[in-house]
View 1 (spheres, rainbow, N blue to C red):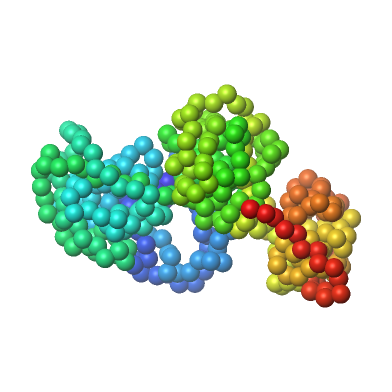
View 2 (cartoon, rainbow, N blue to C red):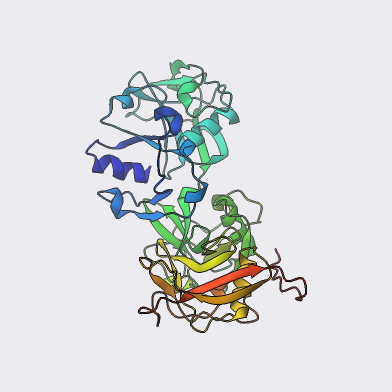
Length: 400
């Protein structure tokens, strides 16, 4: 919804009313240009938002996004839904019926209908739903009930029609969805590793590493659909210090929670930390490296929103083998230089040389990002991976 708000503002179409799936407006064609716009919501146009192309290969036109703005005639159509709460993906359920936003009653509501609402809002899956009494003068005195969904609907408007009742007749419905959009990992070039940031009260903030352990990291990776936590970064601010508020401290998870919000903490904004203590997380689905021809080719790394080259200065066969293992391309690698680099791409890394105890490329010493001795050279690192049956296994294991 934050990205949708920016789009509606850019088009002079009012404010964003809803984000919908491809079955509302049909699938597009040609290229899928970007998978994730990471907007704060205050930008004047989409080009000011950062873009993650990390999951672009996983996208198809069946996942094309649609946006309905308040100045569109479609905003008068029944079936739009929103959650009225402090956070993006939780709050009292409101539906647009007969040109009025009406709250939904708990009567006859189930997990099935809740799943449709969370899916329609792009908020993932359901954490829980419950009823509460409320009186709000700015809302209609009429509420609705009687929605019945099969669970496969893309939006609430495809479910059976509700009936209108007096709002005071029973408890009003609230839903909490598990949203990956309310937490993020930044500073690594990918979505599945980085400094942990959470969204609260309209702004992104960080989490202090006091009491943080691998169980907390597992919950973050699960919420982001990034697999399991590979490591618990004990180095303070491993991915750099953040800015803005420090929202959470002393987080205590059991490890089986579906989202960070189910874990205990002293509360929002209660901490005794500085940003030099910001926590970082690395998940199993994190990949920042590739060979441009599958399991062989030029080494490329993702940083600052784009793929770039790796120079071969000081790189050795042990580093090549680690890269092959990290990419599940074999246990050893043959290193050579290549003059067929993408000249329009930046030279991101140089002097990469891994040590025996390194398990992932991001642990290996190297030059600083963008600083290299190969600006005027065409030679970049090229690796050909293989399974060497005569070589003692170099598999590197991470225990969970």
